[in-house]
Image (tube, rainbow, N blue to C red; front, side, top):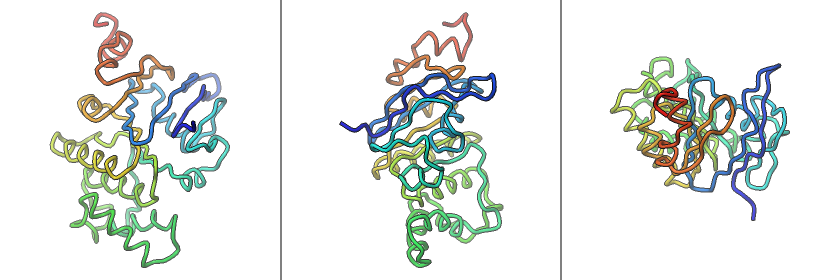
Length: 240
């Protein structure tokens, strides 16, 4: 049986530094799969390997039966993997509508179809009131939603979310959680990196915890939260 997503013995080295060290995991279709770890543990590097912003040093990445690690980034997006970035960088002088249309052009050359698709996604993401606003004028919470909307415009089957709730207040985080759940309910599988543990424990079906690029725990949110190595990584050896 073909696995929806699988990373097999993935390694990434930068010179003498091993940023991702022999990671293997699978993600099932329809799942929200969380990845946690201290700063510098290799989480965003892993996203960069999946989306081919960096080449893997060794190992394999499979998606829907297709081996990905040798494909260029635009073909991986075409295969159905979208992503957001930890530091959001919209097209600043373009409107929210223009930004989302840019993603929609991946699957159409029609201005009308791209606009219709973009307007649907803008409404889905709760951005309608900002549709004609320039991206550079938006507050951080709205820019984060725009980042998600741009990724959704590429029609992903798998969406990689990198710290969607970073910098948000509790109310904004709740709104972001609601949006993530709606995306999953719409049929998009999600892998999410997040430092806000309340968010991760509340929305993840399973969680992979990594430190120094290696797996330290994998399981349900409750299992991972109780794991001694996870407690040690976050709180120190005295708490483990």
